[in-house]
Length: 228
Image (cartoon, rainbow, N blue to C red; front, top):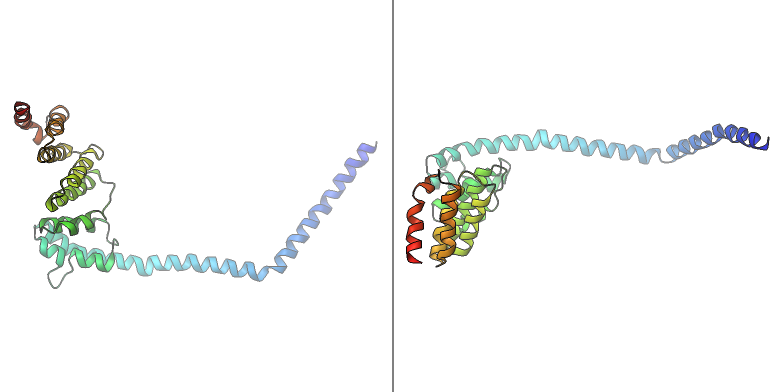
């Protein structure tokens, strides 16, 4: 019987407990109403400011940057690397676009600038730009690594050149891997490591026989085998 009375008492106390909890909540809201209001306003302002920045500032700047990029890309495709890099007096080149907009028109601007510097024989500048480029595209990213390798070789740094050729060749086993392995083999020969050079050439023969490099790789292999 006592147990039943206890259960009834507990059940009867539940509304009281709920009421007390609600009362405390109301008291808290009343006490900190201004603070909560200011916090809510601050969040709205921050979100609104971010949205306004994206729509009113960043997007127009991006479109402006892309418009500037178009003439430079045209010069690049025409192999006019100096104009592509430095502009023609009326339109910006990649160098000015990077100074003004950074990567706003896309990281590809660093690739363009790096390749242009490489073609002009400015190897360290090419390395600096190309190292700022990264992309999910396996072909262009591998090409960027190869170009860094070319630039290092241009400076006489064969070891770093070799490491980037291998990095290019091994990057997601891309369509141009054979070409990069061949460059690595040639550098191994320059470093007087004929065994590793032969390894590169045999890899091309075994794995990429249908590639352009694969068609004439036998002469490279035969030359080194004869000299062993």
